[in-house]
Length: 298
Image (cartoon, rainbow, N blue to C red):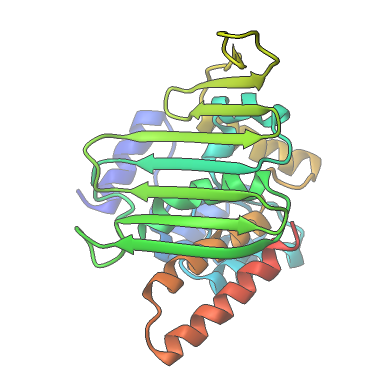
């Protein structure tokens, strides 16, 4: 099915006009949601921003760090809202836990799924792990100190399975695994902080918190509590937040700057694993320097 045919089919389904002419669409809207292939985010995003339109751009913000920074700069120059589509920030289980999380010491995240064509045009770090990198950076307000990453390619020319260990200056350690070659789908996160442990199932969604207690002999030293997780449409919540940002002029919950930081950390994960030649090692150091400096602005 061609693009025009798909546009008409979707338009008929939801009851809106269909068009494949971006310039024509921009004449009739105040804001846009961009969910095109990652390689086109920069070109489409810049066209929309230059036309004076607020933009919600699906993650990752762009195909390269430089393109992401250019989008942020353009939005800033024009005073436009630029939000990045890290929908997991609006996941009901994460939202339920977020007010209770303070200075995490250790974070473990697993995001695995069977192989699919969607998202396979980019590295699994940008495709899947970037969600968890964004969540971690939103929770750990400390500069990154060290990073170790490994990855393998099985189905595509880029990485299909990756593991990264992030160490922050405040002592927090985050261990993240992402795979798109698994037999099952799983999206879970565990966080440990002084006196508390959080177990978050982002797929269910569900959340539990375990609090250390002075238990009697033979009793569990952890008090378990199931948090109230308000089931809802996280994509709708994301779009609603975007519209509220436009109306109020407030900073987006997931800003363009947040998108750049997630991209910087993702790029720093990808390059160290591949670096072999002198020029690649120099590129690695340059990217790590950019990532560290960006994260210091948290």
